[in-house]
Length: 425
Image (cartoon, rainbow, N blue to C red):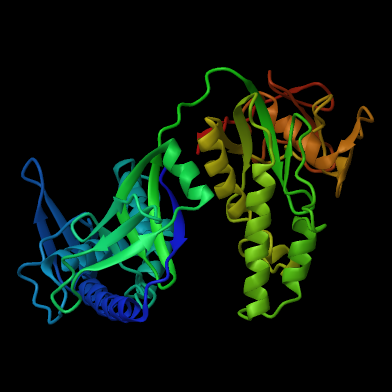
């Protein structure tokens, strides 16, 4: 995992003017390359007499990582080295824009080999391809590697200097003093600093490759994420309110009342992000080796949701957990979540009516518990694989879900196809 952190810089007026001029010219170069690669057929040789072929009009999405810009005509004051960085960044933008289509194209080919029906998938693919547009590059920030940008340590009052060189004769050589923050020093102590820097209007992003060995000893715990309580671990650790009395619920309620796109809305979004990061860092992972996390995908897709529910960003929680667990040497696994919030962690009985908001009461054995804590117990349990299908009883009957198998209320064994149990994050 590559971690990044932003350090603000305060160059003088002359340097700031040159940097803004460079950023503007660099953005124009990236936009030019994106349009050029998008509208032209690119063929690059690779190993074993094979070729990278990028021809979007003919639906060939094999994007190379690097490309020579020597024979591509462009009018600019940027140097060849800066243009190389711009072209590489443009290829990355195109690859990201074609990612979903490339996946669907691969699946269609696999289905065709197995003689499966591809009509529905092909229809979805055709609709996406019809809507495909050239990626927007108006907010691109220069991403420079060691051929144009280097960091040099210093013994003066600053921790070091970012040296921008070989940008073009028009820009000269720019030296920017840097002072590391506490967070930056923590990341530096964990691993290697990469020679790739993102230059923004307000600062420079440093990238690090931490070298952390996964734990070999410790407990396995389950984790449930939610709106009322951000994270609940099966060892009874719960994320609470910050020193200002806010939790995720109160922040999302505040966010739902703000006008989308306003300064207050963006401020509330930043508050939500800061709270999620802070609350997860409060978890004590010292004795934990592995965390089983519920897998949430396309939550609420195709449904009308209230402003309150729109504010729940489970992806932010997942990303913060990934970083925290990685730095702590804890392995994070995602597993399917259907029925786990409805299952009694004491007797294994599954019924929709078991859970009533934050309170879980089992209809079979009477077990009572916090609903999020009960769900985390179920994520910790080593249950047999399960998918939603017609083999399960309807919602009014319920069933028993145990590590050994699945039974209905009359004790008859149910045969259910196994789902993929774990996914390493």
